[in-house]
Image (tube, rainbow, N blue to C red; front, side, top):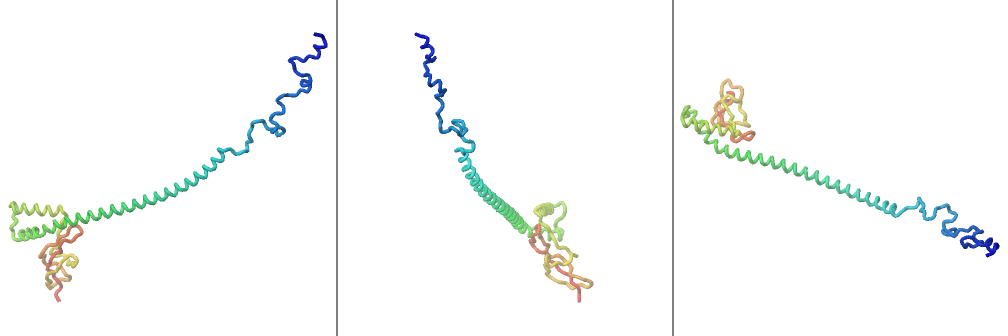
Length: 209
């Protein structure tokens, strides 16, 4: 091999013209991005993604769902308040009715005792209820039962006559009387709580003309 041949030979077998031109085999690829200043493969940051679009749709759907739920909650709350009011009214009516039924039952039992209590009063006036006798003990027990039931007596001589509570069976003109007054109690009156079981039957002293 001559010296001339060494001068013309390019190391690595490369073409002298290609080496002289300095061309790069990678240059020329991705021509679409040439001159726009972007890096090949990058995505513009201002572009919307699929997740952004889906997120917007979900926000609209969520707002609509929240509105429906709020309306439903309001309806349920209204129904609950109505049911509570109805239950309170029902409970009050039930309690009132129960008290009425209890009062009626007590009144029925008490009315059954009135004739017996009248007999005891007559026996006491005639001196038949001597203390220490069996009859007197029985009378005391019956009166104790009536008292525990809430049975009350009213009407006594000397009280002012009240036509709302007393039944006048006779009026006796009496000198010196300035107003109608009970002169004598023929039959005692009884009441159970605020319920009148029987008015007192009385003789009334009225002013003489």
